[in-house]
Structure formats: structure tokens, C-alpha cells
Length: 245
Length: 236
Image 1 (cartoon, each protein chain N blue to C red):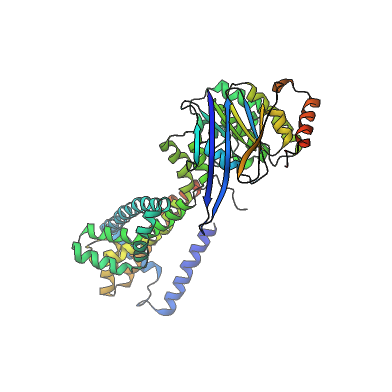
Image 2 (cartoon, each protein chain N blue to C red):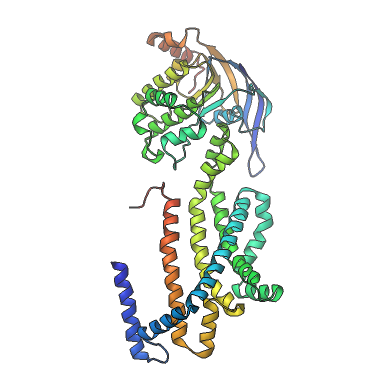
């Protein structure tokens, strides 16, 4: 109910602002909706959204898997931490644009280059979060597992992983929001489809209804995925923790 | 089955490179069916010694020989339960193949039946200790280590849990090592007492108690305690 109210408030603000500023710079909601419907009818909206989502899924999965493995290793093994740390600091502070442009120069304007560039941007935050998680592991529970001769695989699954759960959830949450932002830049700069590409086209043609149509649809998709997938996962990963009142 | 321990030294090095000797001379043996009790001042190195005996610490001088086939059960000072698993699942983690009958019996002895599906966060310290005891006994250990299992419980609760431990220890012929700073517990549960010095710990004296555990009267327990105090061996 509150969510609906907040959405209506947004719509009203937009509409009033459109009336004040004028159609050229800020088209009113019906104009944008018309473009959305037109793009949807031609199928272009779905093709572009699909392309963007596929890139998000691939680069996100790649970065999470690699990042979690590297972060866990760095948190558990001192030598790995010493070797990896300078690279981590470098990657954390490297602007996304630099990575994307370099990837396109070195690997061509290809899908592989785009996905790798997005993944590299997200990787260090996953590493940092999981490293913290691995450092925070309760050693006394490790000792318990050793004393009771619990096999390594079982211990990893039942003793270690549940402790890492909240960190994985945090890395996923911050990582996903990062990927949502960067994927459009990568598309804008070097892909022939996707929401980012369409926004680039709209920018060059100064087609603001088209720009808003794609941006808002994209935002809506992000919102749905966050509420349907990410938030329930976060809740599940930390379900045994005492709830804050 | 027998445990042979001859630790001649153990030290830590602080970050500043200073050497801290924790253990000096710990030599004893323990037979199946016997309860050895270590009594010593707090901070004297008992926990370090237990870590070595449990195979968690290998950096020491001397020798510990424990039969390779001996199953180890341990009750840590803090219960060390997994907060994300229920009481029953905590026990099943250590013993996946425990049969339902044995588990129910164990729960009955320790009065845990109604807490089976509770999570550790919902339990008091006394209850959590009992779950840790159940976990250690569930694996049917040959060698049982109890690290201050009655510490920080109120007197009535401690006495009750002590009886439960006595019942369980009686039910199985294993080598049992109990660490405590409480003379009552030591004399009530032990067959042989090892009195430890302050850090670095050495065994000052070994005190056997000839009467079997189950036949000790309150008078005798008091007598042994008084004797220990009189000999000024128990500076605890």
C-alpha cells in the first residue's frame, strides 16, 4: 500500500514537473508510455532488455564465483592475502570506464570483452566482502569440527558456509547494483543492442521519450528482481540470526 | 586402551618476541574406565594442555600417545554449538548415523527431549552445556575431555548436571579427562586427581581416590577435600 502511494507520488511529481518545464525537455508520462508500448509492440524493448539481462546474469555470476573463491582464499591464507592485496586495491580504485575501454581495445568490440569488463569491475568488491567473511569465521567452531572428526566437505557445508551466507548476500546486493550501472556503460560504448545502446541512440537523436522509456523499463525490471530474488535470499541467509526489534 | 602423556614443555611467543612458558612437566597415563581430574588455578595452562591432548595443537615438546582408533568426544568450556542448526541437528552433525533410540535415551538422561528442535540461541547456558554433553556422548567416545563443564552455573544447576555427567560416565568404559577448579566436582567425579602448579604448569601431586565413584559418601568426600586443603596443595 505504502509502495503504491510512493509510486503515485513519483508519477504526480513527474507530471507536474513536465507541465512546468515543457514537453521538449521532460515529456509527460503518457508520451513516454506510448513509446514504451510502441517499442514493446515491435519487440525491440524485449530484445534489448533481454540482451542487457543476459549480460548482467553472466558477468554477475562470473564475478561472484571468482570473487567469492579469491576472497575466501585471501581471508584464510595469509600468503594469498599478501600477494592479492595490492591488486585488490588497484582494481577497487580503477574507474569502470578505464576497464571497459581497455577491454574493447584489447579484445575488440565483442561480447566477451563486455562481459569480462563488467565482471572485472564487480570482482574486487566481492573479494573484499568475502575476505572479511572468511576472516570473521569462528575458529572455535573449526576446532569443534576437527575434534569431532567431521569430514572436510561436511564441515565446509555446515560449519563454514552458513557463516559466510550473510557476506555472500551483502556482496550480491552491492555487486548487483554495481553491475546494473556498469552494464549500460559497456553497452553504450561498444555493443549493438541492449538498453545502454538504445539510450545512446536516444541521446544522439535527442529523443527524450525513447530515453525515458528504456530507462524506466530498466528501472522497473531492476526493482522487480531485487524484491523477488535478492531480498528473499538475504533474509534466508541470515534467518537464524536474532531479529532486530 | 590407554592414554600416555609426557609433555615436557610448551611455550608461546608474543608479538614482541617474548617467550611465555605455559606448560613445564605434565606426565601421566589414563586407563579406560578411569576419570582423571586436573585441578589448578585459573590461567595455569589447562586449556592449552587440553588442546594438545585433543590433537588441536602439535607445537610442544614431549609426547602424547593416544590409540589411533580411540574416538574423541569433547565438551568445550563454551558449548560451541552451531547457532543455525537445531539441538538435534547439532548432534547429528557429529554423528550422522546415530539411531533414534540412542538419541532419545540420551535426550532423556540429559532432560533435553522438549528442546530437541530448539535453536542454540534459545537455550540458557546450562541447557547449551547439556547439548554439548549430548553431542560428546552421542559419538560413543573412547576418550572424553570435559573442560570446566560446570563453570558459571549456579550451585543447584551445577550439582544436577554433575549427577547427569556421573551417570553418563558410569555408562561407558572410556578414558575421561575432566578439568575443573572446583574441588567438589573433582572429588565427586574423579578417580585420580592431578594437582597443577601455577604457570608454567607442572603436576605437583597425584592423588588417587580408592573408593569407587558410586560408593563415596558425603562424609568421605568432605574428608578427602579437607585433606587436600590441609596439605595446602589446593591453592585454588
